[in-house]
Image (cartoon, rainbow, N blue to C red; front, side):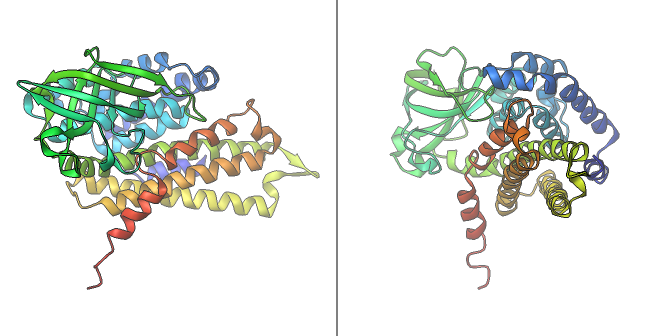
Length: 390
């Protein structure tokens, strides 16, 4: 659609990065998109899509060159995330999670840790980030998983839920509390657990409303022992690290949501241009045109804010919690609204599985929940204004 073409032309990328984005777009449309409905129906992990993603070495996009990556821009990563998510939201969330989990290692890992784990991810390994617990959802400070130092090792006990890639990951970035520092927020720390570590078990995988092909696992840690060298940073620095990388992961969720929104709008426009009612094409009705105008305008404005936030991140700015939360909140609300409107515009056909509109609506919902609910985003935005008028 022209609105998408204009949005993309307005975004300036270096020539080499444009070529990368175009190759990802072709892969998404030619291979990933045709499989999306089948994977959604069976809820099977899309290993074939992961294989194709690795054939393009897409994990290298967000890994620095020093650690076997390509070191491309954050904007290019977001553009590719949007393209994959437009084709298959499940595959989009799987690939984005590799970035989310790699972030703390890139930003806070030692040189040895980066060489060890980033090279695994760069070469196609899957990664996961484990924060949420059964009794600690939006309030991460209420986590109960413990890290107990024992000589040169760390002993882990606890559980996590709703962990994307948790059952298939090669590298797990895990949050818990350093036992010697008590049970408060100042005890939150991060360790890395590798696949196959004794005591690290998958309790179950969830059956979900949407992104059904993306695995979401409950994990347990029973006297799981890892080397002390697997600690990122120092004990008690986990909360500081969390706030830092949320500024980068929330725009990633926005790109995922905008991919879903693009797909829904594309399908709605195609449908109403082809269908007629009372002797007129549906698109000719003024009420329908108003809906389309709102969709196109809101999508254009949200995508421009996506690139604005990306530019600030690329400039090295860290004080962007408000802007990142605004972006995540608005993009995910937009994905839910456009996908819901697409179902409405398509009527009964939008409600059945012969068309992907109903799948996009189901897939969109999680973007309002993960990486902080919409309510949490509003708290972050509002708090950033407290005291500014003084």
